[in-house]
Image 1 (cartoon, rainbow, N blue to C red):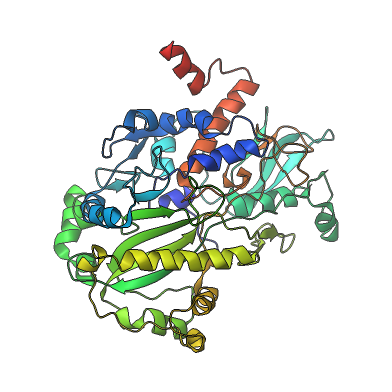
Image 2: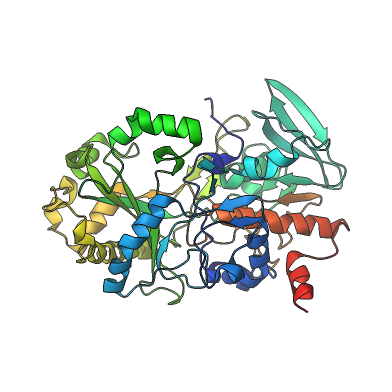
Length: 492
């Protein structure tokens, strides 16, 4: 099987959403035994990488950075929708909030990593400016197969495949793995780091028995509900095919194609969970043309989206911010070219199903508001899922059946090499991101998160990398002050 890859990973193909999540996400990381990973400690690192060009508020200086490599803006379609949403928020008693500001409950117009109509991915922001450095070599298409260790269990290099040939490269100081929450545990296990029983079963020599490798797979669970809306609010086929729109973008990077055709706002809601300041669900809105979902069956597509095909649609994503169900990643074979086996265990915890139904009810209240009905094209077509119709019209049991048929994990995978103190037997890396049981090896990617953040994780992965760079420099004597220390000294 050929696996398509792109430099920059998700940052090169996603909706370019820059949302950090809730303060309590990071405070919880710290409370789980990871000092230095609380929100206040990470805020200087968020600001360090950011060049905020969005709507200025009273909190902008405190929560946003200027001059960093990553531009963060509010696009014109988001600004247009924000004005429409103000009466919706007022009617429902919700605030319009900065998605990266002090309040984490309310309606949040999105921020995107775009500049002059062009996506700014991780390689554009961080690699392109330094790609000529003599100590940097980029090998698109290379596949890391395993980490090499000496007799003292110190990582001394990696073995990789490039253009069909196997190569080895050695490390003078340490090896850093940044392959993501699915492939990082695969590389670790192929290298002999992981659950001893699983490694021995496959005949892999055990370098370090670390049971947590590949466990604790976390992500967001989501599905979309769709409403037909009046013309003029959503993108249509003609917009995508318009020669004028194409020409405008080709010449000046302006107009329709300069804006990501994705979510325009998040609605972060507390639905009775762990803390009133910590959102339980995210209802995110995209105004777009009706199209089939490639991840569900043709039969279900024909029922829940078929009547809206090629019509103007308000697609409302219903996402659980922190599902309680956990999956795991396991090796499928000894072949480094094979994908690992991924077990999501969707709705393994009963609370997730009940919370998803609560989120549907909250979404219905929003879409039934007087302000929202201004753009709804009523009457709405019948989008009943026939497999659940016998459970009654709009009952909780109907919606439980519905979401079981249609809900999917988001591509927000994390936590399979989680950061934890030594007292946590399922931890994989320390708060300094060093891998247990060996030396000279760190993990720096979404897999080190102890628990998924309450929103899209791109900004969180950036902050992990920013902090990791200082942890590495500190350990090797190259750093005298962190951004937080510099800020504190400046204030004094």
